[in-house]
Length: 291
Image (cartoon, rainbow, N blue to C red; front, side, top):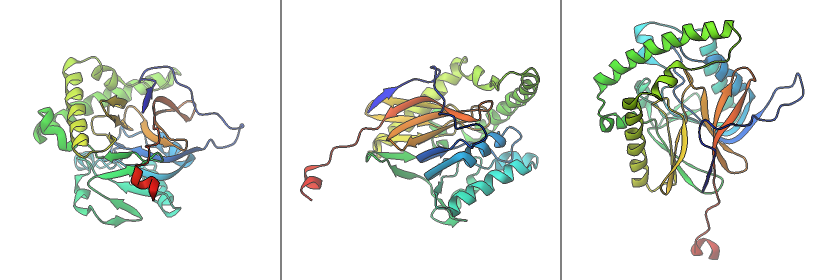
């Protein structure tokens, strides 16, 4: 596997169609997590634009799709959030394979692992096989909180502090929008500059990678920490698909066998590839060649 373009580098957008036509994203597989439907910070409108433009063989929902924690504090469910769910069900009805791995904010759904809900399969973990034959483990990541020295009580406290940051984010976004500036995340800016936050991200990454190595897979895709990343970690690759409350990012496997980290651009109404890994086809074993 070869790695190219690291987060923060200049990226190119998808090619635009003619004026008035709908730009289509076509993938073999797509991973989304930390959408947080039911939270005021969910960027449902942007996600809906992506889903309506996207064709994909498989769609993986990597936890915290519905924010039950937020709705227990205050019920919030605008029409745009309902439309996101409806679009997911439409995609499932039209043949997209959708697998949902619940996280900590929607942990109530973990009890339904192994069942189907409106054409959506629910699982605790899942392994995706790429076009090139690589095995990718998919999990949310909340199971590693104890290894990052964060218990459930501290997680909820941190969640409240994070909510405060996102509240400031919302007010800042209104001002920037009024002035004609694009979306910018204050929360992400602070996380990238606080040493303790960076240490926690590093511990989380190491725990996820170690777990994936024990599973003997080629790579792992997770969510949970709202920190998008696509990088090579020794013999396996680590991908975090980010979130839809501050980063608006996702992971996709292209139809030509490339794993990509995308970021949604609300002004261009399309996604930009900000990191990618070329997935070379795995050589067949002698037994497979004889067969």
